[in-house]
Image (cartoon, helix red, strand yellow):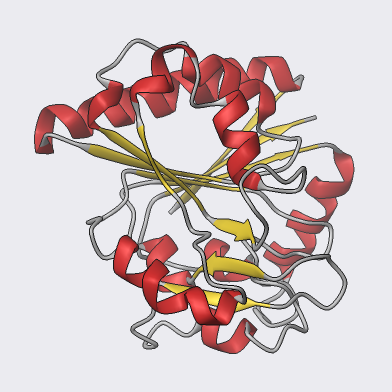
Length: 230
């Protein structure tokens, strides 16, 4: 149910992915009147964000949110929201609606209910774009985390979960596996040989607790494309 697309470099990938995502968003707007896009933070999607922000479509009908967010203020250097606002919610895409996972609660766990309420406003996602760490995590579903089993449970009824990573800074709010899979299309966006190696390792086994990205690779619920730049 998945397809692997390889690109010679990140620039070629960014062009192809921005065109693909724009087409999916436009198609959803045409069919349903609106669209939603889940993105991930980090350095990998920066070029893609810039190209996507220039795509011509009715951005006023698009809601953008993150797969996970660090529990810091939106002007904090480590905020994924800051990254998205500065690199994606610009140009044409400045007209899109942004749905924040971070709210005013002091602790992420105390912000879960408010976050879940905000997410409940959205139906099936149009596109979910996920990154992957060298430890096999995706969103903030980290191996070894106390929240991992609940975050991966398909019968939890939860859309989001507070996470305290073992080895990464800041509390997080992450979308859960069932909420991520409630999407018309999922894309794993990675670059470099080391990520390709982790992906191969993930595909070779089935323990989702060891490498949580396996929960995305093994699912049969949503179409999956892997975009990899060498």
